[in-house]
Length: 424
Image (cartoon, rainbow, N blue to C red; front, side, top):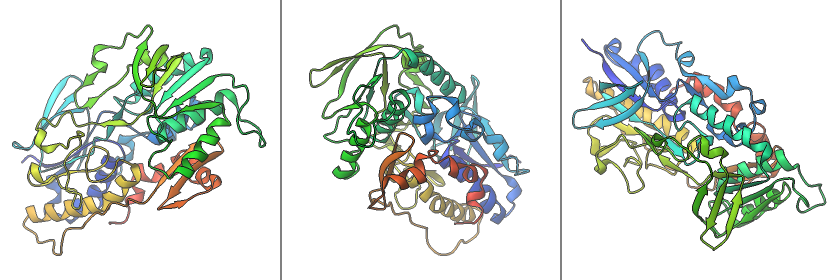
């Protein structure tokens, strides 16, 4: 008899966390638990501390690579049965047939699911910031970027959100150093670094006072900020990105590896033209939902239309769920993903017990998004701005919590499943 597959699409924070919870706390509670199998589908065999990319892209010396990139098979070796890793890319979800198609090295495997969790996350417009494909593609992008960096005299970063500010701060300090305590800005930066923001302030989800503090910190590492302007056109020199960089099954891609090292002429919508030796698009991300061919399951911005309370995808039939950046239940962020995992897994457990003829009792567990101002933004290796649950934090605490290693101190227990040792 073929196993009942609990398919989890995505091998990052949401997918790995869900898989550990199902294996630890749900399968043991089900009748005939040996008849179930957790199938984790991931484009990469590694998980990565994605928030660390703004610093990690500069040099491998910035972080212990064995902690930055962690083998998924090693993290799940503790489970002797009931688990399978499929190193591939989801290409089609057929909720009417309850199947998922996965491209595994050019061969399509169709998996019938008893339950499925979409945790495919999002892709950035630059390949520098995460697994738009896999670990090898990301590392190749970093190598190309690092080779171009020593000769760069002008760098333009588009995007005034956390990623853009963090990248500007890291590159500014690394290339230009930092102004003294009594200087408001770096007088003669070695490299001209320009940060272009479409908003009237940096960090548009933060209060203006915090945004102004971020701008002041950037000035001290030689970063010039241009606000209320968008990059309208990019003319790259010598770009020869492969055709499949634009669209790969299951995930969207922006510039290819060659583009991270290509010089560019940028036209802004305010009429300004800027020449850049290096151009970095750092303005948001796109949900990895191209494999969902039924548009009725998607919101206008391409995310999975998810019940914000139960995390079920109600329109897709029984035992279909979504969490993380690919889901509409909350604003995309790692802390919202991790906060949702106990709710998600509690409701998966209820549904699987019901499908097995067991009464779970009680009511669904409900998720409520925390909309208070929460964001931590390091600016270089020693400063930063931010707030947690509406309370502004001093620069020292931003460094202590995030800026010293960009959350790397938290990921060991998460990837190994120790963070989920207790249920709920």
